[in-house]
Image (cartoon, rainbow, N blue to C red; front, side, top):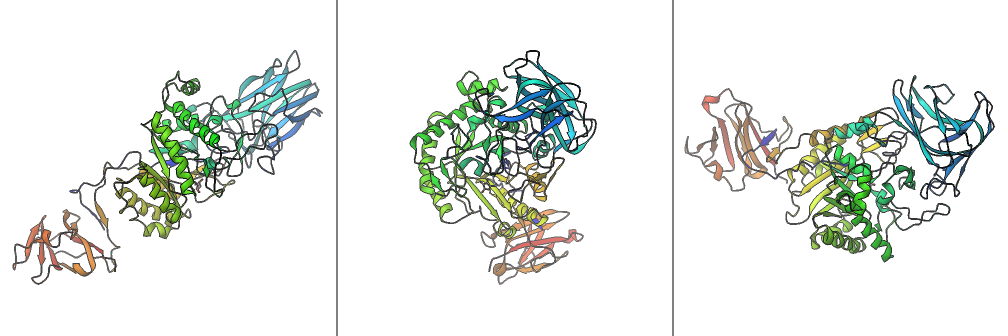
Length: 631
Ligand code: AHR
């Protein structure tokens, strides 16, 4: 039974309490939420990122009508721009009907999912050395060449890079679809940023998000959006990127993820595949706004966790990351005529995004080193943006020396909010419902940035739900909570369990998703103190029929409550002040009428009590519940 006491006011629950953590793990962004269907669209892949990668990853050369041209990825001064350094050069040798040399992209995993009747937006950056121009033929087809749409013809003119666009409408469906681009004639045509998006993106946005996934996330009504990681942000911060002739950092740099997509870098992703940054900081902020979530970015503290425990020893690098963080705040909130606010405005959002919270660090393992850097970040942010809440970190686990030391440091420094992470078995979640009951109300608030019980079964969801009642009961200290990870492609999973699963065609929520949705879409204004009591029929079920129920309270039970379906809560006693609330006034010297119920204590001890329904209520069933005391 659940006993609810509406007369006592519990803590307020913030509307933003239940949110999401979106990290590009399990192909969550590229190959997932980011709706781009072409993999390696800018030919930047290579062994510097992954042993299996080449500049032609996901591409194959094709020839129509016996054409003999060549397709080569090159990195030379004719490149599209300085961040997008490689491009495809087609050296053509064949004109005539039906001839054409080019490439086919097979998309992610099983192929490009094509649905009959749907329209797809194609775009490419191209240039040709042929004065009359070069005609590109763009096709959607299956692996064995069956057409899936009427071909699109695009006339490339001029030997400077320009963007060409067109739409293809599918006439048939296929799971193993692909995008084929060929050209006929002679000379050289250069291609880069070969792109295909479903026209039907989330809210119809250009460079947008896969609608079914974004809608599934939106249905959670997330209060906040933590992004972009996770281990994604705080690893590789010290290493140079090994790309030929372009040394730079391997870590996630927010500035590389904004501006025109064709100027965004392609980078190694901590989770073992490449990220295009097509879903970058602007898109994260936009998505947060679209789903009504508070944006909560995480920046690297330059002390890496996630298996690489190392603090930067380069003060200049640290200083640059601190400045990058200040610039990020300007990008989010600055006026449209400020340097970074102008970048945001140019991208289509002159109004500020309303950033209020920002986390420094993720799963930090080196408390002293981390905190030294954290203080530098916080001081710089506080000096320029005192309105921003800077979130600290408590390491990768629910307890232990690192956790304890980090909390100590956070408390000493009066940090406003601390990020906790834990992935545990369901029994742990059941046993730790009261974890936050004893947290210091004067200390930092808790941001439970990542948690999940280790599996995707119903029992896990149930354990999480039980645990979440404990989070909510402590909503005065646990301010934000997000399950993790959010998304997983069934064919590209690095981490499980996950909240939402998908393949190229469909998506579905786990049982945990339903729990998150239940809590997030039914958030109350404040906690109403309540108690759940043991399963009916067990020894702890004290329910009695009309007229009589007895129990020994002092030895074994706390928090006694008498309820009835008809009368609601009739009385409760948490025994915090002994038997005071049960003062007997009637009957054989021991009866009391309290909240409409008759209460009797025996004459020798207030520990043994008798509860009976008022005679006038003889049709009422009384539920008598209590919590068994430990021991
Ligand atoms: O959520 C998956 C990973 O778990 C995150 O990247 C990391 O912070 C944690 O270890």
